[in-house]
Amino acid sequence: MPRAKSENDRKIFVLDTSVILYAHNSIMNFAEHDVVIPITVLEELDQFKKGNDTKNFEAREFIRLLDKLSQDHMIHNWTPLNGKTKGNFRVLMNPDNKLNANEIFGEEKNDHKILNAALYLKQFEKNRKVILVSKDINLRLKAKSLEIHAEDYETGKIKNITELENTGKYVMENVDINAINTLYDQGYVEAKTVLGTRKRKSNAFYILRSDKNSVLSYYNSQENILERVDKRLAYNIKPKNAEQAFALHAIMDPNIKLVSIQGVAGTGKTLLALAGALEQRREYKQIFLARPIVPLSNKDIGFLPGDVKSKLNPYMEPLWDNLKFIQNQYKETDKEFQKITELVNQEKLVIQPLAYIRGRSLSNIFFIVDEAQNLTPHEIKTIISRAGDNTKIVFTGDVFQIDTPYLDSQSNGLSYLIDRVKDHPLYAHIKLEKGERSELANLANELL
Image (cartoon, rainbow, N blue to C red; front, side, top):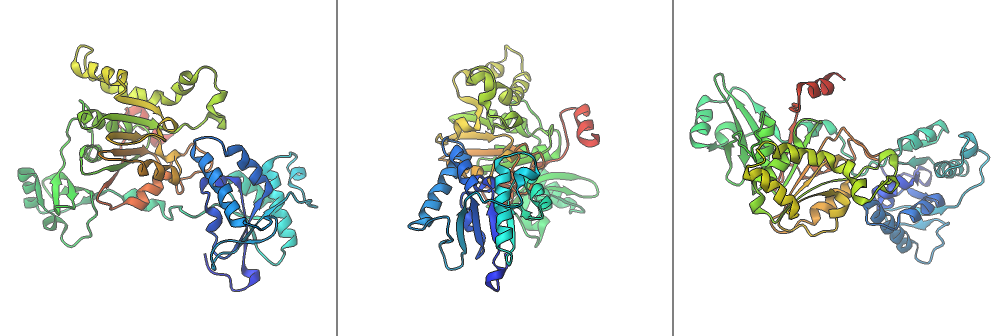
């Protein structure tokens, strides 16, 4: 954000509740410009301060931050933010405007009160640009209809989402046939033989092709070699294409502690992660398979009938479906079939909503987080920061299939993870491109 040349160049940013719940320290990220918090935002945050979800944490932390910044100041007046390069903030009480959003839109609601705050500032701060910042697209559209500048909260957003598409896998043509033969014969080849002076990324996967042959390979940065990747079985699940083979290799590699798998529905993300975990069950104390709950019609699960288990079953059913699919690779009399039932009964394999696992210690755990695109960057960080000794975490999801209203392909936690951790020796990422569920499912993904 360019620095203001004069007082009038300093903008006024009006923050919506959705921004605070996304990042409690967002108030500190507007350079030397001033920030306004409508009193309605504080009223809404009061409803979120109790609970164990990330949004509850963000609400509590913001309230503490505001209290710390205000000290002896009255917060309805301009109060300096910490640091010489920062601007000021104030809490704006409900103004009495000539132009009233409640009357314009025919309904009295909190969003319209926040719009009224921006309208008030626009009227009485005529020499300064007033901008409403919200992660609520509809609120931004309403603001623009009232000739209020509005924008998304940009801090932490991925600038170029297309760059993530090329992370993890590379195709090389016209590779020396001798290098490919060496990979087949020895299982590895010196990286410089194939890659030459190309920049090498840790744990990257390569499809190497010559005129006569091809091979799948993986770059081992510790030994500076390319290793052959085979389509190995994991609990009787076999990869059906190159990308699945790469994904399973990362899942099964003990030196890679963090894996992300991106792909549309039906590409096998969760199935491969679960199969790989079951194959390595003896290496870990427990297998956790979790997913965030996205309430139906934006209603909390408390609105659903029944006890806690019956409320949660609809959300967890896709995970149980993957487990049953793996189990059905065997006969009921097979020990592998019975082992899965035993793991579930003994709680060695646990399928739960993410909120039920978030506070637990993650030592000696194989942890699979499904639908990770519905997490915020802060939630991703919180999960990873809880990893103890001998813990591996696999995130799966589709960054273009967002089910929560205040995230998008550039601001969700999975995109953030892929962008920030790429090329780290402990991390591997692969994108699954080909649907393997069925020809009918592929038809839906491609044509509908």
